[in-house]
Each structure stands twice: as C-alpha cells, then as structure tokens.
Length: 165
Image (cartoon, rainbow, N blue to C red; front, side):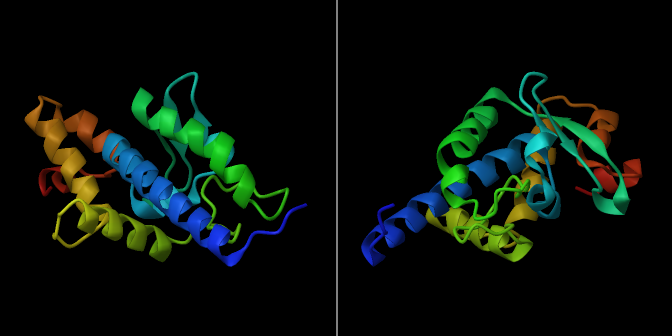
C-alpha cells in the first residue's frame, strides 16, 4: 500500500474539509438539525429511499425523523461512497461523520468547519450551526410552513420555542 506524502495528506485533508463543510451546511439547512444531532448520526440513520434521516436521542433524549432533500442526499452519497471509506480507521465505525483521522467527528470540529464555510461565503454572523438552524426556520416560515410542522422538524417540545426563532 502506498504511503501518503505530507503534501498528499495536506491536499486530502483540505479536500475532505471542504466536502464536510458543504455537506454539513446542506444537511443543517435542509433539515434544521442541531449540530450535536449531526455529529451523532450513524450510517444506518440515513434512509435514502424514504428521503429521511432518523435522529436518535436528540435534545431531551427524543427521537424524530426529518425529511432530507435530494441535493443533500446526493452530497451524502458522494461522502459515504468516495470520502468516508478513505477516512474510517476502524472497520466497526458506524458513525456517519468521521474526522480526517478516522475518528468520530466532534461538535467543536463541526462548528469550526461551518464557521470556516460561512466566513468563506462572506457571512460574518456568529453562531455557525445554530445560525443555519435559525435560517432554516425563517425560510420555512417565509415560504408558508405552518408552525406545527416547524415545531416537529426542529424537535421543539413547545410551540413557543418555535415562535422565538
């Protein structure tokens, strides 16, 4: 098996980092998931045929199912087929998102990636993952979503929480 040079490893990490940024922003924006929910996803939580993602043990230890669009599924498929297999260091690793070192992606790494992506897009607002979650809610409301649907999608226990967005 060929060894990566420092140059190759750096290029791989930069490419993976960019792909992660796009994928995680897409998933956050298209599903309204919390950053902590994204990093806890397992490979088997994505049901591409049904176009849903199962969120297990979300905030308040509650499960829910969220719809996911074709664009996000396309990015997910590219990641799971082309990128993830090169990163996974343990054959029994079922976490969907892994770091460039093959370990489970942690919440802080995800936040950093999303911040970098937003900064690169010229968006200087604070909040990274949560900013995208708020954007999802705002776009849904502006496009006619009812509050109950928004409440369910975001996993809010109370309708009041959804109104505070």
